[in-house]
Length: 283
Image (cartoon, rainbow, N blue to C red; front, side, top):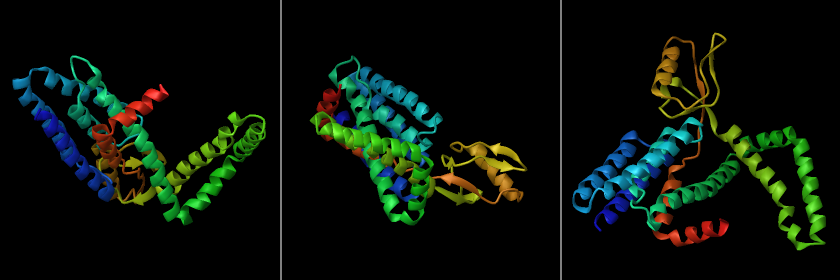
């Protein structure tokens, strides 16, 4: 079916462009996200005239489900606005086939691949930052470990206990490294966030979707709470800058996450068998 070629082609091209802009500018233009949403639903509307209303309904169902997920991630400050809008667009692209059959779960596999590959991608990106910005990272990492010294020692003792038990039963051998590995992984994440993700920025350079790292306080009163910034907050910050009441703000830069969308969608197109088997094994 022509639609089965048009939609994936449109998605791949858009995701490549979005990945480039996210890596280069740390944002995805709204016109790109909205354009993908309208193009996907527009194509489905046109083809539904020939193939029937389920073609359009599939896109609407996918869009609605991803809209709800996007709202959840956005309003809990897990994702920025660009990532959230892109998820809605992918919902319209992939859709949820109706009447329901095995292919109706394609959006679920995409979302599972997005979370799985996104986690790996995020850890690798943070590892890269920790190495390249080690002068800033190492002191913060040491400080975090000292801050949680009791937990660190407890996990070392637990790992030692698992090591002793592994001499009596091999079942305990994989558990030997798990407690400390998890602790160091969480410390890595926190250390990179504190040392590499927070920077000072002129309020005039703020863009919609930037994450405010701390509350903005003017004359001992909080005027903007720590959150993802929208246009009304940006106008307020720029007004305070113009009045000379604010010199800079602290912005938390996240990982450019859009490449994970591209990887997940390519896996969804060409490697579904692997992920289907993997998650079926887990479940």
